[in-house]
Each structure stands twice: as C-alpha cells, then as structure tokens.
Image: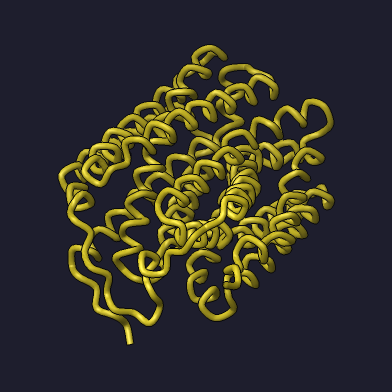
Length: 387
C-alpha cells in the first residue's frame, strides 16, 4: 500500500524535480555543442581542456561556498540566484570567441553550477528524510531526463548557431528560475515528520560511518562521476572524430542520457528487490564492458551503443552511494558529494590532457577501468558493517 504523503512534501519534491531537470538541460546543451564552441573560438583540444579545467575549479569554489551556506533558510536564495547565474553564463559562453573569454566565463559557469548542485542536493536530502523512503534515484532520473531533452535539442539544432541556442536556453532557464523564486520558499519550511513506511527513514537509521568507509564512498563517487563528465564533454567529440555528422555527434550524449534515465527510473525498485550491492556491481560491469566495446569497435554504431551501455550501467551508482553516506548524516553526504565532483570536474580535463599524449579513444578507456574498480569495491562500500 502506497503511504500517504503530505501535500507540502509532495510539492517540494515536484519543485526539486524541476530544478534537477533544468540543471540537466543546461549541462547537456553545453556539453553536446562543445565541438561548436571549440570551432567558434578556434582553440585546440588542449586549450579546450583548459576551459573545462577552469569550469572545474569554479565548481569546486561553488561547491565549497554553497556547502557553507546550505542552511535550510538559505536554500531558496541559493537555488534562485545560482540558477539565474548559470543561465546567464550559458548565454555568455555562446558568445565567447577567444580562449581568454572562455576561461573566464567557464569559471563563473562552474561556480554557479556548484551552488545550484549543493542547494538542490541539500534540499533533496531533507525531502528524502521526510518521505521515509528512497527518492534520490527519482530525482537523479529527472536530471538525466533533462539532460536527454537538452541533448536532443542540441542534436536537432546542430546546424544552427550554438550562440542562438545557448542564449535561448539561458533565457528559458532564467525565466523558469524567476518564476519559481517565490515557490522555493517552501523548501525552507520546517521539515515535516516522515511518513510511515516499511523502510525506516534515513534519519531513523543513521549509524556511525567510519572515515575509511566514508572516503571509499567518496572515491567511488569520484570514479563514477569522472565517467559522467567524460560522457557529457567528450562523447560528442568522440563521435565527431569518427566522422559522424554534427547531429549524430550530439546524439551520442542523448543515447547516454536516455539509458541513464531508464536505469534511474527503475533504480529504486531494482535496489529494493536485489540490493544496492548487486545492482551497482552489475551496472558497473556493464558500463565497463559497454564503453570498451564501443571504443574498440571504432565505428559510429558501436560508439553510440557503447555510450548507451555506459549510461545504463552507471545509472544507479551515485544514488546508492549517496544513500549509503546518508547513514552518517548530512555532513557525510556532503563529503561524498564534494569528493565525487572532483572526478566530474577534473575528469574531462584529464581525459583531454591524455588525448593530447595518446589518442582520445585510448584516453576514454580510463572511465571504463574506473567502472571495473567500482564493481570490485562496491560490496565493501555499500554493505553495512556487521555489529
């Protein structure tokens, strides 16, 4: 029997779903049109890697700032101003025509991204606690569906100016954030009591989380998010290098996002039936095999299938890691999230640097190798220690 959820709690969840989805749209549009950004500014792969590194450094700053300010009373302001800043920066990035301007805009874009991400996840943790059952996979599914929509939009507008696309998406995101500014105040309200559910709430089953296990969770999050960053920033470039059209290149990230969204929509049910360890291990193994096959095949079809398998395999890992960290309280969740984003932020730049030394397909084997590590270490990270 489905538990009754208070109207204000259901409303907060819908609002957070919108923020996660919007963030996915913005990030997918940025990543999918990366070749156009590179071409317009006439920068090399190494220079593009520097831009991604600048965005990574900005996001680290945004994560730290947002983490310090993520008090419930400040969540509405963090979400609203962060979203407006992210939308404005996307439009500015579309107008950049030099490495210097890309570096500056990329850094501020990263800061805004970090602030929004911390605020949304902090609110999601409170909402999940109040629900008394896992909902994190569903919220992350909203991000994936938003990313899918953004990637599809980038694909169908591949022959149009990326400047116009970035400006249009930025304007739409800014309008949505402005309209939701007053509505976000509900996220600062006192946390409702958790609904009754057979599964105890995260708040009720918190336990001591050892530092080694906490850092292992963070390391696996970093390994997983490095793969997500690689897909967002390099999947389209990989297809482009294989001779794919602009539309097909942009569709690579769409395939990845669609597969990840599918896995996350089923994630909570699969975890309840088979357990987090089995789901994460099987998924990570699929991700490693799929991406390796896609790279080895060296054809457009194999590459598309490889990125799709990679997305499906990684889909439930991050929600499972965050849930495991939740047993140690919000501080543990924040530690795992920040550590994980080190992989997301530095990974694309690292792959770009490796690609200048070897080749991009060989550099992209790194996320596949890290997926193998996730599969091997998942039991130690996710299984509850015996008393």
